[in-house]
Amino acid sequence: QLQLVESGGGLVQPGGSVRLSCAASGFTLDVYAIGWFRQAPGKEREGVSCISSSDEYTFYADSVKGRFTISRDNAKNTVYLQMNSLKPEDTAVYYCAVTKRSVQRMCVPGRFGLWGQGTQVTVSS
Image (cartoon, rainbow, N blue to C red; front, side, top):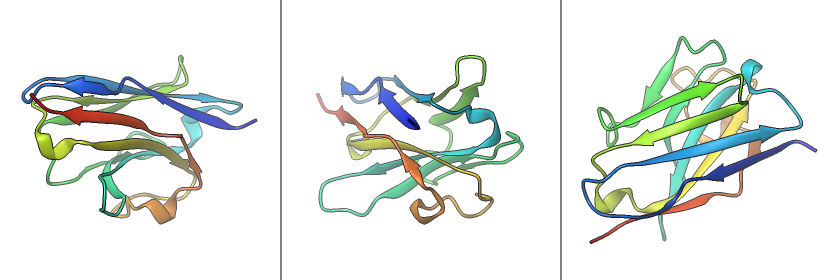
């Protein structure tokens, strides 16, 4: 069974940090492009960061540039999203997803076919 499982979410204070993990099972991540998306209440799901299968291309939404970092550990079959200097507007459910399609200049939900269940990140004092 192909599956993605996110973890690492929770309640964090403004200015704090959290690292999200996305573990794959039933397949290996190294041939897939990976994306992190988020969805806040009443808003559409948006692309936060994507990385190509070769790791040569990365994308960050303007709202997270310089604060978030996407990475993968193929040995652990896991992808990460390091989130620093968190703001209340980063509050959302965060999802990871994979695709074999190109994500260059197209870090959008419609490019991705397999999704995790999501993990809640709440930034609040």
